Length: 423
Image (cartoon, rainbow, N blue to C red; front, side, top):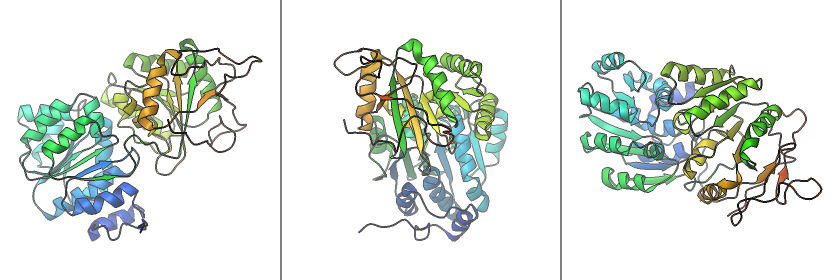
């Protein structure tokens, strides 16, 4: 028998927290909240597999606040990036305020002095990035001996960023018993190792198989020569009028592509590891308010971008690993909204595209842009003719056809998006 998700009632949430949810106009839990909250309230460890934008923060935040309000001890939330730490902290503020639980955020790029002052106030919940928390542990300005609830948020990304040694160093000094929540979009072997070593009989809850893409994200891939990328990007930005999150591989590329976008007459900001914390905050704030239409980001910085209603994600560069593709395009199509993701690839990247398609268990539909020569590429040959005789796009490639107007809908298609086919 299928259980319908009606409200937050019946999940074991305390009345005071239900009141906060009502005041925030949160009426219906997301699937991961519906599944995870009762398990967490029951005191069990959880491995939650869910894509970005599915409401994971409240799935662990509500049980953490409820447990700490009922007992002594503190909570620790580890995130891979500064931006994500700040946004987790912001999302939890209404709930922590309701129970007068002091909080502290420990991230790089901000004053150690101010963070030490907050730690001296004995916060009940600490939200931190691994590197900065290690700094405080080394200085003996942070103590973790009374942590009763631990959250590893975006755990797969922390491993991708090389934080496993720091995470293990932190886990080894945490007390047992404790309750641990691990949330991840994918389930690499490193996550399995952490779960088996540091968790107590965790319950795995999954709202979609690892690597599965959201149904409401339309995906397209343009196979073009490398020197055609700027031209293709210019055409896409001309035809697509919504907000755009654009991914590149390196910090240097972020600056170069952001300048390219601005030179084409669009407002743009960049967010990457070379930007100061203030610059990253300004870029993110400007993107949220519409001051910048395009936000150019590297993978490391983008994990903290939690902006509603991003209409288009562009992979100007392919990611270093297939799992990053899942995280990238998961920035659009969030909270039930439709999203669109466009990837630019070159003929020599055929195998990289193949690995992405294996990861998401689907083929990314190929498209073409009028005025930008496409190349064909399959998994046995690196490249093919630029077009069919007669000037049309290569076989199996749909033509990029902008709609008239096209301010709120993906402008590249006719009719509803076609479902991806299994590989």
